[in-house]
Every structure is written in C-alpha cells, then in structure tokens.
Image (spheres, rainbow, N blue to C red):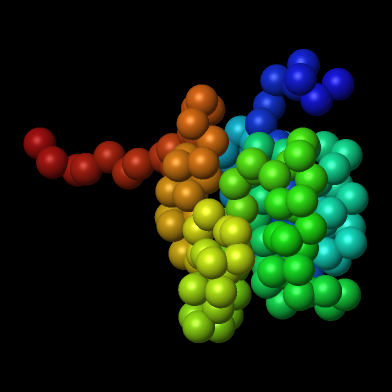
Amino acid sequence: MVSQRKKKVVLIVEKQPNFTQLLVKQVMFAGLTPIVAVTGEGGLRKANEYRPDLILLELELTDMDGLELVSLLKEKPHVEKIPIVAMSTFSYMKYAALYGGCDEFLKKPVKMIDLMSHIRRFIHKIEVREPPRLKSRTG
C-alpha cells in the first residue's frame, strides 16, 4: 500500500539505458527506491500505480513529448502535486518545461551533484546519504 511504504520513491522516465542506470544508482545511493519507465505511456502508468514522491523526466521521449506527459500528470488529482524535474540536452527547453508545469530543469549531461541537490530539495523528510569525504593528511 502506498501510504505505508517506508522508502521514498523516485520515478525515472528516461529512454537512454546508460543514463537510466546512472540515475538508478544515484537514487539508490540516496536511500530511495527507483522506479523506471522508458516511455511516456509507461511513465504515466507507473506514476498512477506507484504515486512516487518525485519524477525525473527526460523531455525527449520516443512515444510522446515529455511536456505532454507533464500535462497528463497534472490532470490527475492523485499525482498532480508530485514534483517533476525535467531533463534535456537542449537548454532552450528550460522555459517550456517550467512553463509547462515542471518544478525544475536540468540540462544534460546532468552533474550528479546538481541531481542530488534537487532530490534533497524536493524530498524534504528524507535522509540522503552524503558521499564519503576524503580525510586530509595534515598533522
């Protein structure tokens, strides 16, 4: 049941397998549960099924425009308030994404430190593990 789950869920809607794997690893490292969809239709279905806490969305999908998916998500009362971080290789998509209902935009290639910052920002009540820091050799 959605309301009883312990871990926060991040839906990753991304068509590129290598980048998807990288996102999944980062989400898992943060102590979150990743759910993956490779199409807009799959993203819509999984958003309705899992009701994730955050959606990471590639705007250039194979079956529909990412902004069309955002529009469809915003029409659904039980998923309309889920934060959406849009991603694209095209920086000019930023304004269309934000105007179209996304909460944030990241230009690809995405810097993982920026991604983790946005995950922290949108998932407030979660402990995101920090990467290990190197100890200095002073003294």
